[in-house]
Length: 499
Image (cartoon, rainbow, N blue to C red; front, side, top):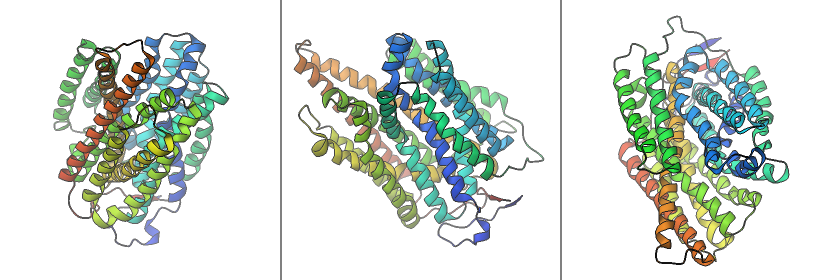
């Protein structure tokens, strides 16, 4: 096996021998593994009432089915990324698939609440190995600019639409089988992903001077990210004034500042600051964070609206999101293969944020007498087009030009931004929506069914406004932080690896 470290400016031709001969098959395997990870962000949510009835746990305990996964996944991502860099992306990818499938089987077969939570936490742990290994494999496999853009368009579309696909699949499996199949389905996905990874991926050469894992940095960032996710989860469960919320969030700020300081001192830093300080990469990490916060208003509150107001079934609700998924996939291809290579990210990513914000503002007009075709579908398609312009481009640029030795941890940082953004969105927007519903009922008859329905509509509208506000903030940040012009690949960019 040999390596080539030659890279080419965006748009320049690359000789065929410099391209990985199995790159498109590798993309299929990596995208399949990524789909398995992102599905679990939403697929189990629709099954929670059925699981609760079967296992007999309380409403208060229900959140731990979601939180256990988020805590393990979010807090261990950077460590998982660095492990992939140090010990080989292929082996970590395969271990991640097997572990994730095994944890899914454990959770699916759970006969008690405790076993289900343990299985979900193990899913998060192995997901933290799998997700950064998958993205870094994509980064090191595609070095030709045009092919990289096409590959990241597909990968970004999978990552961006996975939550919506999870809603659809979760509804189908829960309605026509049972809740356990929302977990068992990962076994069906894992088998071809594992076989493909075993046969197609090259084994990474071990560096003679392989650095040690940064233990102090690992402890600081793991506890810091855990505190972020746990603090926002507690804010959603209790309130912002609870020490369980603000106490953990304050601790996370201290721990992450200490981690940043330590990375400037460590001999072998877990997350070298050179990965973050590139202007386009930094802008991309922020774009992923803000997009993940804003997406919460689309997926959760529109799901509530469709089911509780329009009386859609879980399956029909999932199908209702498909036009957005299709719009996202088309937009992803256009933005990453045509627009960013021609105009650069500075006009494209802000325009995507602007479209997504406009779609959410449009959705604030939804009411009790709205219909899906006339009132929901048009803004949903606009949001899909906007997200398709943001997420794949940001994912590609967040890992572009990263040295091969840092590809795993750079990829982990992308996934960490998504996870933290989702946690922030879950707690913050849910709290704001609940407060809006409570405020609407002041001075009205809370037992009146019409008043209750109007209060829900008001809370959904509040959520859409806030999500639109986050997308608007993303527009400003992206416009200010991205460099003008077409990005050039760094001479230190990740090399292609051939047999």
